[in-house]
Length: 208
Image (cartoon, rainbow, N blue to C red; front, side):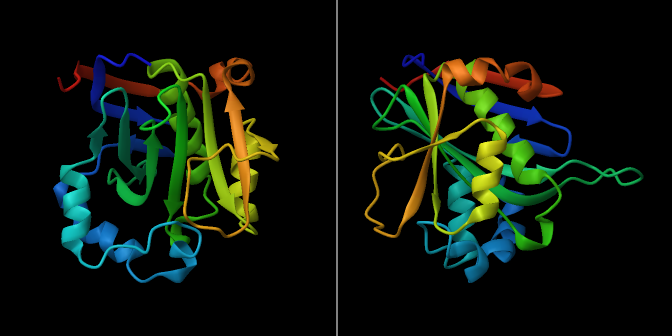
């Protein structure tokens, strides 16, 4: 990864999903999608937002930087359906490099009412493309709490392999989990299929 620059703009469009930074106007909807919903939060290391202000703060600080890396928090949107030009926020994706600059670490959630539509799979594919093609990651990891089989299948579909050793970012959560890793050599075999239909990104100098 280029440690002297960080992403200032991100917009990736797949067949059914779009990734972009969250916006202030997304906050109320995103809060309603996740607040207090155990069917989502039970699979995350986050207890969820207390108020919509928490989601607004996340939108205003979607990029976090360290001396040599950055983390990015993105909104997952459902692409417009035929006859309907509206795009709708359906979940969130995080791509983290802080504390492990050469390795991206993915985290994501999709609201239950939008699951089963290929959105998680499309979003993971877009995030992997961003990590490898744009941010020059050597590998990308993700962890899934047992027994979240749906998320496991999404990762395996994109070539992530199950590892016995911990490949995920360090965590204080001691629940059993599956550790997955996708290295650059495996990603190269899938790169063409993961390429976004449309994309735009821009870099800005990292903080001094």
